[in-house]
Image 1 (tube, rainbow, N blue to C red):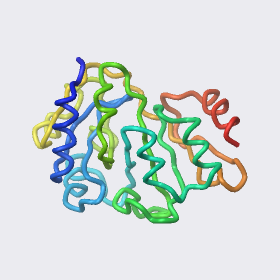
Image 2: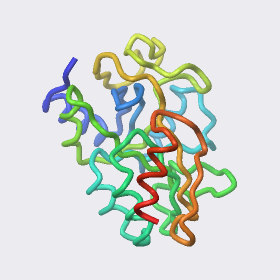
Image 3: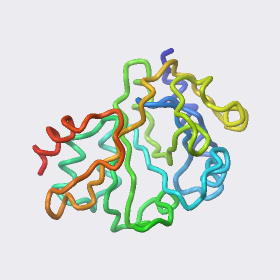
Amino acid sequence: MALTAADAETFSRCISVGGVAVFPADTVYGLACEPDSKEAVRRLYLLKRRRPDKPAAVMFFALDLALAALPELGARTAGALEALLPAAVTLLLPNPARRYPLACGVGVSGIETLGLRVPAWPAPLAALADVRWPVLQSSANEAGGPDARVLSDVPEAIRARADLVLDGGELPGTPSTVVDLRAFERDGRWSVVREGAVARHELEAALGSAA
């Protein structure tokens, strides 16, 4: 089921007024909201029944937007983003400017770490690449529950309480690979925190060229 430019515009409008949306990504269905709105973030976490101190990720819908929003990244780390993205990966990055604090949780690193997503949009979802608004993003499931491959897999309570629900048809169903790049600028070191849609050998090939 292909999304349209009108769907992308409706999504952007929903986020801009503090709404919470269910949307299709390149991996699984997700929840999205304005990353700097305390009320929107609170609602998203309540929908998921997720502890508010747990981190989420900030999603940009195109790579150039992410690079422009994070000018403090070092050259080696920026090169890693250009080599890896867009892709079904979530990158853990140093966050010296403490951007998007509501997405960062209160774990060991707290706001010193930022989770970043830039999806590789398949053709049916390509309209979303025109969204210019970054979002706080998390999977559209209850905390600890199964990921949603199709819209009907998203819990009915979440769909009913979201302000917008976009149906993108069947998705791959495997969540993003989580890659820790926080030490990459210093010494080219990285690690996989969670195995997912992108295999380690693909990461090695991309990051080897950026190190």
